[in-house]
Each structure stands twice: as structure tokens, then as C-alpha cells.
Image (cartoon, rainbow, N blue to C red; front, top):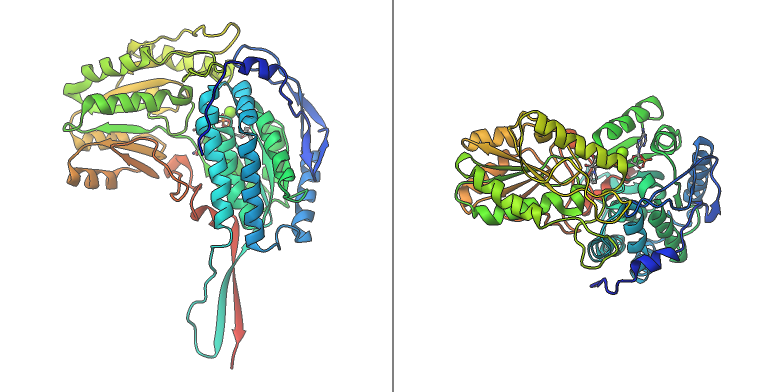
Length: 497
Ligand code: NAP
Ligand code: MG
């Protein structure tokens, strides 16, 4: 499956795009009771149509609808193969609407149209297809017990799942939650990020069109502290699956503790270290790291935002990374050749600029870029990539910026490099560059991260789990392991004596 963004009429198409502005509950479009959302396109700062938002009473209605759908058995008791076929039909609907969905993503969060279509939509279609194919291939267990008894270990859907997701890969993150939760028979309530609601509402509509019964997937736009919190605190939500910031992820653990003790699966931020060993091809490693830091305007939990190089290579690394920065400038997200688009919002832009200003104030050496905004499309929110030479103590080398800012850090030996790499609160991903086989194995074992890339970056496949350790949370998306988050084990004993 290859999607190709062609033509340069995306801005015209955006003018006439159909934008859903209400909540989808029990298969109906309904108004929410909270203050409506007032989205703005970061492409040009233009106000977009207001979106209805859910308050606690709307959340309650959606949870009741999801529970009733679950209890009806229309989805939860359907043969796994039939559920799988419905997910594959859903994938096909998404495939057929890929350009429309990509346009919505680009409009609402500023991702280049080509990336939205070729990378994001492809991943979304793949994900629903993969879990659709997997639905009837998951086996239960029959462990050996005493001869006079039989014990079955079966998996049952948990019931009602709330999926609360971010805006940076809006539909990919949504697919990673929805597909496994639905595959095993749950009902799901999706709370999209405020900055990526139109695409989520259209996706939920496509689920209905694909034959997933009403109430099995409800979509509730709204504010995190209102809609998200009400889901987290609801007594009849069984599981929360969350991707977002560490701060909010920990809030969900608190909501759970204060309500029904629901399971919370947090997938949180990161501060990926890209560790270049002395024997590595410096130029290739630095280029890949800079690209990995600037991709999606740096708004990526796995952004390779820390480049660790031997002290002797520091200046050369700064030069190479700066070359990449200077040739990766933002442009109109609706132009098909654009590879760097807009920052999601003005507040995010201000936050990124603040990191750069403070880094300069702390003595960081700015080798490319600046704390100033960049003018790509009038009225829009753009920021050119920044490369800074820093020490591990600098704020920018420790905290997640979520913008195109690369910290270049010199290390003295491998122990020093590992101490720096492991020295943040995060543990999502890391990269290692070397051709020394033994060193690669020894060092990757000592890296505290859920994902390690060796001589590559951002490799991924639906078959392989994705998630972190430490402050990056403990949820795992993708692969058959993700199904475990959405099922309970049941042990059934049968007396044969
Ligand atoms: P965020 O602020 O944590 O928001 C994520 C979701 O939580 C949004 O839907 C948000 O709603 C909601 N939310 C916000 N405050 C809430 C509250 N008090 N109670 C309940 N829900 C609340 O994260 P973000 O700014 O959208 O995304 C950036 C973060 O996501 C970064 O830290 C990044 O590293 C992380 N991320 C992690 C992964 C991964 O797989 N590990 C992938 C992508 C992103 P609103 O939109 O209304 O604020
Ligand atoms: Mg946020």
C-alpha cells in the first residue's frame, strides 16, 4: 500500500473539507455540554469551526452507551473472526478516505501533507489490518493440572476502555489503542487531543460505516482537565490507555487511585540519546540523529534530541548537525514537497523558544538556529531547527522540549556515555552507532530504554512492541503483547473426579 501526495490544491481542498464538530455517542452526533473548543490551524493561524466538548455528564452518557453495547454482546460476543473482518473493513474505509484524513491532520496540527498521508495514514491502515488479522489467532491456555481436574485459562475483554491520546501522531496513536482494544471485544471511548479532533471524529465515523456497532466506539472531544479527567475518574471505566506527557500520565494513575482502581497504561515522553561510538561513521550517525530530532518538527516522543559523541568529535558533530538544520527549514504543510511543517500551537512554539533562550543563558553554544520564530506562512506557527552544544547538566539536555532542538553532548568514555544516556528521568528509546559487535551487545544491555536502535533509527513493525521504562511509563503498544492490556485472565476449574 503506497499513498502518494500529489497536486498542490490542498489549501483549496481544505476550504471545502467537511469538518465534524459534534461528539459521536451511540452512533449519533450529539452536542456536548461543556464550553466548545475553539481550534486554530497552526498553518496560518486561522480560526477553525468550534467543536462541541464533553463535560462529566456527557462522559457518563458515553460510558453508559459503551457499557450497554458491551453487555449486549453485539461486539463483545461476536466470533473473533467476524470482529477481525470488521476491523479489516474499517482499515479499508480508512484507506479509501486517506487523503481526506491526511488533510484534516495537516490542517489541525500542521504536519506536512505528504508525511500525514505517506507515513501516518499508512501506519493507521496497517495497524487496523494487522489486529483484524490477529483477532482469531490468539490462543487460550490449558495448563497441565492433576488428573482429576481440568483448568482452562481464558482471556476475556475487560469491558469499557478509555483511550486518551496526543496530537503529534494523532491517528497513529489512536490506532495503536483502538485496534487491539476492539480486536478482543471491548467498547472504547476515544478522547482525542484538542489539537487533533476533526481527524479523530472522522475516523470514528468510518468505524460505524464499516459495521462496528453503535456504542462500541464513542468519540468525545473535550479538554483534558475536564473530559479526560472525567474518564479517568469514572467508576465504570475499566481501563485507561494513555499516550501523552509524564505529568498527565501520572494524573491518570491518581484518578484511578481515587476512583475504582482501574488499570492505567501510560506511554509517556522521552529524551532519546543517540550514542555514537568512536568507531562509527560519524557523518552518517549525526545526520540520522539530526533528522530523527527534527522529524515531525521535533514533536515526537522518540525524537533523538541528545547526540552523544566522543569529545574529540564534538566540533565536527556540531558542524554536520548544523548543516542538516540549515537544510531542514519549515515550509507550507500543504505543499507536497514540504518535509517540515508547523509547530502545533503558539503556546508550544513559545515553550520551545523558551528552552532555547534558557540554554543560551546557561552557556549553551548555539551552532544553528535561534530562539526566534520562523516565517513560512503568514500567521502560522513555525520554528527552524536548532543545534546546541551543551553539557548533560543543561536543562535542554535533560527535559523533553518537544520541538526541533538537538543537544550535542561530548563524552569521555563508554561509562561516561552510558551515565549521560541513562541520566534523565525518561527511558523510552535510544540509538547506538557502532560496528563493533561485542560493544553493541554489551552497551545496548546497559541502556535503560524500552527500545534500542542499533545503526538505525525509528525502525518499527506491528509485530514488535513499543513503549518505555522509568518515567516514560510502562504501557506497550503494538504487537500481540498489546492485547494483554485489554483482557483479563479467567481461570476455570472443572472437577473430573
Ligand atoms: P498531554 O498534554 O499529556 O495530553 C495528552 C492527552 O491528555 C490529550 O488528550 C490531553 O487533552 C489530555 N489531558 C491533558 N491534561 C489532562 C488532565 N489533566 N487530565 C486528563 N487528561 C488530560 O500531551 P500532549 O501535549 O498532547 O503530547 C505530548 C506528550 O506526549 C509528550 O510528552 C510526548 O513525549 C508524549 N508522547 C508519547 C508517546 C509514546 O508513545 N510514548 C507518543 C507520542 C507522544 P488536551 O488536548 O485537551 O490537552
Ligand atoms: Mg499538553
